[in-house]
Length: 97
Image 1 (cartoon, one colour):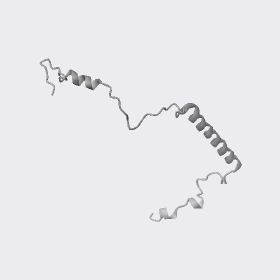
Image 2 (cartoon, rainbow, N blue to C red):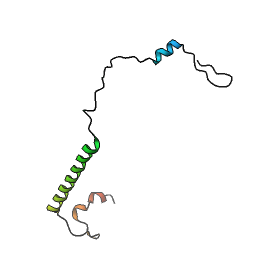
Image 3 (cartoon, helix red, strand yellow):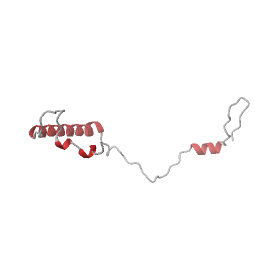
Image 4 (cartoon, rainbow, N blue to C red):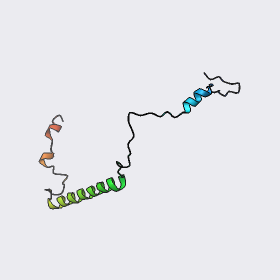
């Protein structure tokens, strides 16, 4: 353990010079997972992915707008607060009142 000096500072434990040099040496060896050259496998996000996603979003939006203009949904008259259409009534909900 490191001893505390009278000044309150903690002294580092003494390490022999041989052990210190051994800790600082570079040990060359083979690793199980060798790093590959990623330069061939890299794909930049900005020109590749963002452009493709933007084009797909525009194509999807154009197709959706085209389909919505071609096939009009069956709309009913304007909403009337005094008259409730039959499917909107829920008699089972009011049975206990």
